[in-house]
Length: 342
Image 1 (cartoon, rainbow, N blue to C red):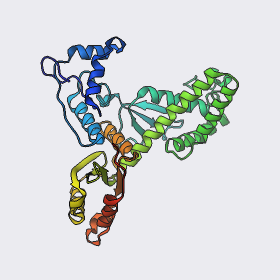
Image 2: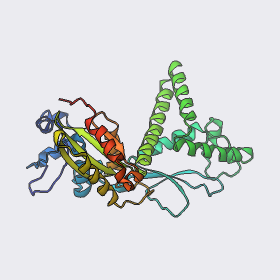
Image 3: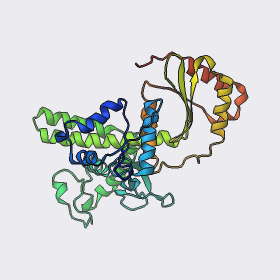
């Protein structure tokens, strides 16, 4: 969407373009002020067509990052992304939030996460659940007020609680790594009990904490999946006679191609796959940066839908291309029956 000067002020996607555009101009009184102001500034449109919804999501993300339109908030500023930082080298580590990540400082980082508010809520929930929400940050050998409320084990008072505090942090790290979800089960039990006791305020608080922690864990799965630098061959059927081939690595679509099933040459496609992945130099093991997480999330969500089929191509298959392993995998992908959504 463009204003009177031809400047792009909004980028969006739609399955039904007519319905989407009409929605901006109908029932204007029900719109928030952002939409009302946007509509008042629209003077022209540019339309870009894609073969699949996945491509539309990726294109929308790319254009928002490049153009930074005034009325787009999501995916606009990488500076809004946050990391969880745990410095295990401190005598008494703590969970902190930061906007920067330094690979050389020895600190354990999680993220990036697109919502600082949800990260803050999750950290409060974690500290409450593990009873380390201390209200005496200087720990001057006096028990804090939160200790009397059962929210702090008393590490602020010194003694055995400090050793317990160190053990708790190992459990927190295991939780963030997705290896220990016992505390989530306990929070769900407390939420159900609070609801059964008609303490709906407490139940809602537990619910919000659980959702916020779940948000962190889901993002970590996306990040872990993407950091493995998988060579992915993805196929989405466009019709009974054609499909779209995507070659994806990390958070990037390296190439895409519409192919007619009757004319699909598995040998040539196998060579294309081998050469494309072999010639793409993406450092192994690099963490996902703030400006990569949006594409990574789109790709991850796409692969979890029923719209596509995909196969990971290990590096040794690419090195040993002549053994026909890629061709065999590609044949199965192409000729697996898939219902075409009308």
